[in-house]
Length: 137
Image 1 (cartoon, one colour):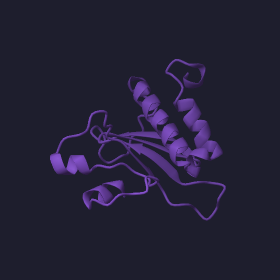
Image 2 (cartoon, rainbow, N blue to C red):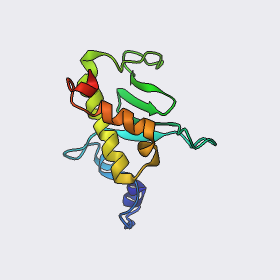
Image 3 (cartoon, rainbow, N blue to C red):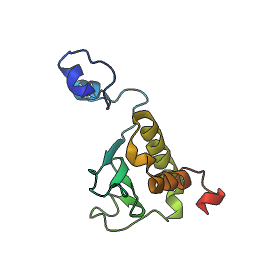
Image 4 (cartoon, rainbow, N blue to C red):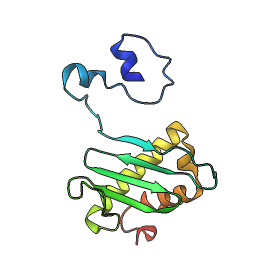
């Protein structure tokens, strides 16, 4: 919504979710400090004991968390069909930590209930710990 409002030169209330991408659309250049990441989640399930999934997505990677499965790290360059889980790949520990921290920050900022689900919260806690810490062994 912030992008559409800015493109129409309409002032927003400032409480809307999302980021203003109008500079990128208008100039083709990314603003300083811009991170190309977005957050997605599935719709709710009828059974409120389990949430669907929530993900941090970059142009190359997806970190997907769910209360009904282990975390998944997808590499869209190496596995465009999204069949292989790279979550335990030691070369990607720093990446997983970074994406998990991004999801934690997103969940706090937007009070996303999926991030507050006990299973997802536990996964986020373990994954956002620095590599080499006891919870990441």
